[in-house]
Length: 175
Image (cartoon, rainbow, N blue to C red; front, side, top):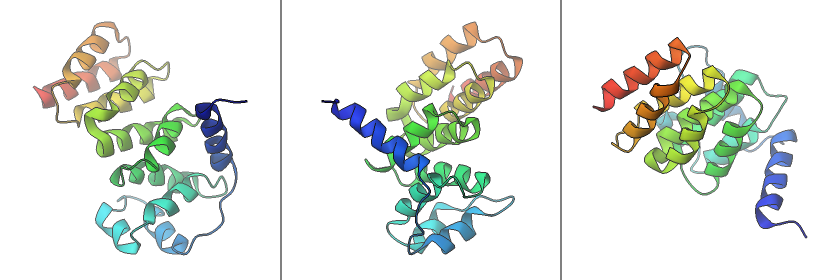
């Protein structure tokens, strides 16, 4: 019999791969996510419905939705930190979609702060330089001294100039 974590991972993978059915607030949420420049604010999304995070999860899992809307959905899930949204955001961080992974790094920092340090530390060591840069920026937004040794350790081995610059900026904001 498969272990509980394995069953959860399989279920989450199925949810993320299966097109979602439109929820009762789908149109209102998509209207907010389909903006060009400004992302939707937490206040605007919360005003749609108390359970708006369920619509965001459905949109993230809907492969037929615009990619940019799915990216904004995962980022917005950071404004609704709970036990339902966190595994979805973590799955996006570890997934194959590079844009969704970067947005998940921001969501984890915004929603869970220092509690997301293990996941963001892993992302900071990823082979994808853009994900490392997003993780460094996200870590720099966490107002906790625990991020300093993580950033210092990565700076000592980082070979990408862009990532090094982002780490240095993050360290400057936290010191």
